[in-house]
Image (cartoon, rainbow, N blue to C red; front, side, top):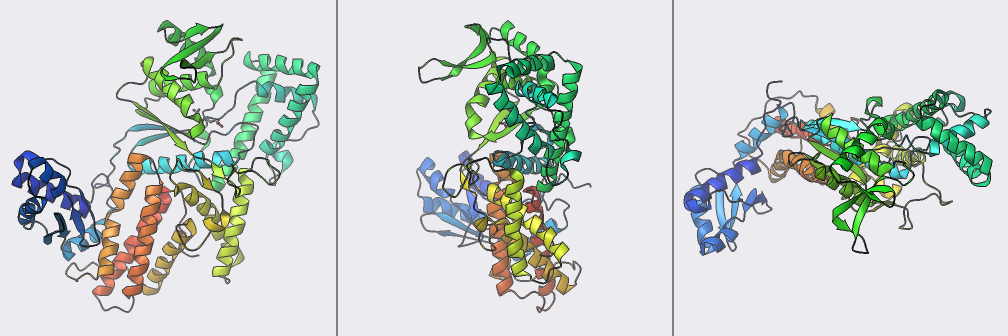
Length: 586
Ligand code: ARG
């Protein structure tokens, strides 16, 4: 489409430009200052620009505001000075209708593709092979997925990377154990659809671990298996490959249920970097960055010191010659920059890995892999808490499996949906309960500021009122029900219709969609979009309560229907950027 990249400039931006221009005319030396325009209760917009400026030119804010207003009145519908020097600015009704029409007619709701092809690697989810996905993988998967959607929508070239934990000594132990217990059934086709291969492997791994701890002979055989795996022994490799493949099947099932974008192509696990580790380290040694420390190779940080005031070390090669998580991430960052040509790297993990990434990024900078034109950022997040305010655990104190948690959420949502609409056919109820339950979990996560911990409280998450996913889904479905009943196609907006206050508030809210998305992209905090959508839904409610749609005479009716259409589309689009479905009926 021709206008994919074009933008419907929000009125706020237009007003800001007008204020800037007026400031430049009044005081040429102040040209280019921030016009500090925002939405206001007193008028459509307010600019506070005169206050800081008056200080700079040593004048009175009210007088400066008056001079700016005099110039501005030529370009905006109304402007008046209030209080100590605020500018209250109104725009013309016809200009507001024009925005609604332009957004409705635009394939991207008027939002520009501002990321312009920036190659952005997003490293997220990354569960560990032979272990079940648990509550600890929830946030990385949901936040990563939403950021992937937002940046992709804004035109970034997003490269999703699922840095699977698929390598390490534990696999030697597990493979040896499986070999010695040929009667174990753990393949997906053996355990059936009610369970998963990882679930079986998880149990078997725990059994292997136990045997390892009590049986020294098994421990020796397990260690020999680690060597066999690392040196590429075909039978051991084949067993490992099967374990990885079966685990991926189980992860795929969770991803499908969660409705995230991750696919088989995105699995690029730790093992992928195996063959690059030696080279990576050699380069760091050559450059004098990695140094010997008691037989191990380490990189001493130039910026981070430990409690003893000594530089913190990053372990590059252990004393026994083994490589770990740190080394793999060094090879990974080098690969992503040199071979994937990434311009920006985002890592979505909990905040406890902050030091790890700080040290990795520092080393990559010193090695010259990260340059001033490339960017690496750890997108950290807080912990999911249980009702007791501690990290979420099962009643028995175990880790909460992601599938159990989702089942629970869907059951809760099902009760709410069934109560609200008792006549839904069973199949439809199932589908909507799934969409509402999963959506509720995602929304609760995304609507909290990333770094904060939050409590996993299903009653609150699936509530029909308040800032919840279910509330937004219902708000969206209700608009579709209005549109169905009014059975009118989009007839043209008449820009000469005078706006009622509630129509005005809704139209200006719709016009601010760009800013909400831009803010998410800037801060990598999806909750800004949640706040926006929640406010939009509430503004719509006020509009619908005060402005009848179906019974209004044309052209008022047509204009109001246009507002309904644009609100429904904006809500659905916003929810899709959060990875949340927006059913038309609930
Ligand atoms: N598998 C790791 C974990 O479960 C997360 C990996 C994150 N990505 C990375 N490149 N280190 O904690």
